[in-house]
Image 1 (cartoon, one colour):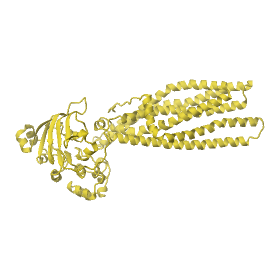
Image 2 (image 1 turned 60 degrees about the vertical axis):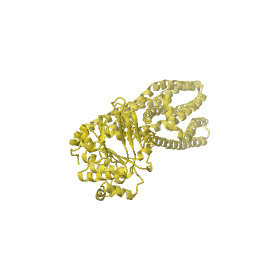
Image 3 (image 1 turned 90 degrees about the vertical axis):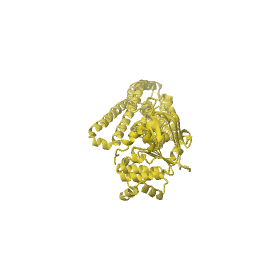
Image 4 (image 1 turned 120 degrees about the vertical axis):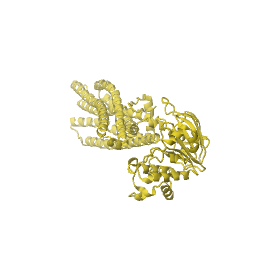
Length: 589
């Protein structure tokens, strides 16, 4: 199951699957919920005794007997019942929050291990909504709904038994009204579920739209598109408002039906009961007690209606959570200290790859060998499949044909964390995360020493930057490194990769945003690293390519030629053309 990029509509889970998912969330807290339910039942039991005490009070008043003890007992029942129910409510609310926390932990762990293709075809805002908004709704059904159904159901049955003892005829009148209105409510419940599901999807759309805007905030401002983008987000907010109103409307109908059922029942019982009192079939005290039970019936009926409503609301959230949890994920990951050993070797054996089944192949039988150490450069026109090589080595994607070998071992046979621990990777856009400069440098090597950090700062030409920053390494770099220049972000990304002490270093245009001085310095660093580490680099600058021990020329998803710069200039026309044009084009500083 996958979440589409646009026009999402989460299918409703079958009732059996919904209950199975609910039980999975509920099971670790079942004993605490049982305690809260028991306290709620005890509180409800004290409430059931109150009409009997009221009946005794009316009888004593009619017989001119003392009522002090009865009033004291009635007061004690009210206070005791309220106190017990309050404790039970706290236990259940605390458990509900624990359910939400556990669900968020599970979902966060799952989503952070999603396979890259799943993330690329999913809107990040929608995933964030499932962690925040949907898990909040989960609490309503995993505790409130279940407990309300149990306590409300038992209290409802107990009250009906007491009403039957009072007068079976009046009970029949009451049940007739309740069944009639309950049948109408049954038609409302599916509307609540449908409206809630659409409301959650609309809220997720708001998150998606906002993530899109803030992810390209400078572009939005530079394009003068604030008003247009605000209109798009507002449209999503208005849709959420409309769906929220629709859900509120149906919930209001279900809630008011309880009061309607009790009021109609009261009028019917009052009329018929008055006639039965006049005929001598029952006493006034019996009628008063029955009417009190009728009003007491409001609470268990409300709980049952609330349970049904919360189930409809929660089941929509459960469906969205379950959908997210079924997305394809990688195995357990995490930081692993790289095993000892020399530089890695990389071999592609007739590799074929495409990003999706409905898209054309990016690689068509790609084959090459990279011994270590040394530097291997990948060159070719845009779209030739150079960056995809790195994605396959890192196992962000799985080859659809052939094999990718690291150290003579198929990457699919490597433990994922161990494979990636041996690799340092600098992406094309050199992302920097919000946080301090130190946090970014140590992101892949959290146990790095101060000496190691200082050394990598020097090698990446970042020591001068650290001295200029007001808080040094503890200076926040802003959202996506907004407080750093493009070249500084690129050097931070390179330093981060070097600090991991990899056996295989992947550099995807790692010097594209550097000025000539810093490019030369970083090029020397890479050349130095390549004496001990296997370095693969995608480069568009001739100065970088000429340093490579071997060059792999790619075109249209195939390896066209492999050799040194001098060999390829003489033997391969495409490389000769690239060397004369693209490589000599000045890159941005």
